[in-house]
Image (cartoon, rainbow, N blue to C red):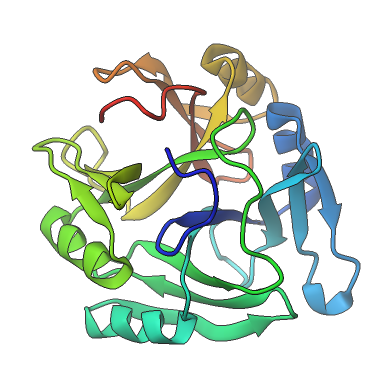
Length: 257
């Protein structure tokens, strides 16, 4: 991801909803060196912010409903959460939560695109989003995994103003040509039973070492460390509670898709 700060339309935050926040804190702290701080306010519901040194890079929170599967959610920065949510529903998306205020921090909404992939909108006020990107332990790439390539290529640029770097195999999302993610269709090596979803990739210094740490901490490798055609080294991990995320070697984010 070439973006280095939250900008309108770009990814600005990642949040884990998990069935076991203390276990997740231990797992991700060992994996990425995060320092986690839980908001003590009762109304915050156990919301925990992960820091890389002093920089805020991600959040962990309890699942909101019984039976809800643990998952990572990617948030995209917008100037107007209400207006963008309305635009998304007009384009065939579904509003799942909000829009609603989060203290003085900002306003958010949770939506699903026409294929069912869930994402969030964040209208920052006191909090704009992550303090750092692309370095080990921070978000560096976002990938939409979907059954519906052409609808996605119409939906997201129309709603969030993204540019698209065309490709027959892996189109890339961008803001004014600064790519921050890509689109992987299910028939390109992903089992058909996998539902559409957004997959955050976190930068690491050493993919092999991170994969080994993930396994020793109870995680599963859905994709072992792999050198792909673009020159990137990546892996995909399922944490002990079942949430899936990717890692890639820091410095690879500017490779072609």
